[in-house]
Image 1: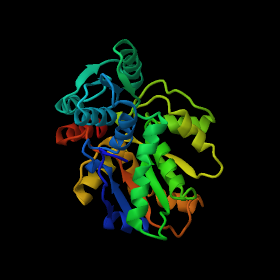
Image 2 (image 1 turned 135 degrees about the horizontal axis):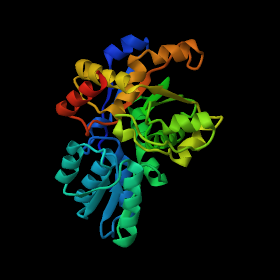
Image 3 (image 1 turned 90 degrees about the vertical axis):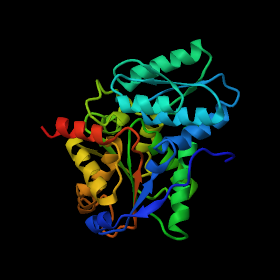
Image 4 (image 1 turned 30 degrees about the horizontal axis):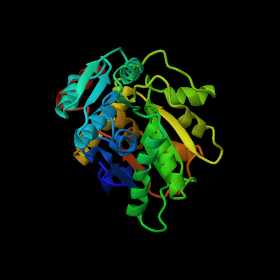
Length: 322
């Protein structure tokens, strides 16, 4: 991939997490990407394919996609407009503006912001950058698994991959990556928070459904409808995708534990994946026979941390622990 915008991120062993689950746990540190999350892989790839001759790009986002689009646009020397919902924190707005992008605040949730982004793309002839629902994004995100395979080395295969699901872009990219390296038999544990659980709702209903509202504090998981492709994958008999939920309180606890043990602050959206390890979910899945008793190494995708700082962490604690 010529002139890529993303970094090859570290795959770090977590001793404390490994002790908890009785198997080696590796952390894929996507929070160390230049824009703060995995999103730059797919968005960088898509912009290279579609936005070279562009008048500018427009992207709707709960935070991370906007940050990535703003970063890539700045590097490509083209203007960017990022449409954020009112639920976005001031921190996110500030960080997007720091990348030189124009911010427009529209609507209550991401879906509203997205409608406005599509309108702007048409009226101002801008290149629309979808935050999660596009094959080029998934192709870009797939590079993450190629790196995991290279890091683990010949003959070592993960026992499972744990990730958070928002709109489903990371999930689709990881599946694409698993296909590319011949690991389609590796189970995926797809984590969401209660109140931002569009994938779990679709899996339960057997069709794509739209949530009435996003009530979770994990705003970066805040799509009301999961992308069609992610749902299709959940119905594939040759893939094992285990959809699980954690509460906001459990997620916040995971964020705090991760900060204490690994010295890294991540956002709530990322905390959902970490909670799978900290809340004993792996053992429960083993007891239920949904994961093998003897597990190969677990890979947890630390998807990002750009929409949190100590002030935001304090706010979340006050809100969720009362």
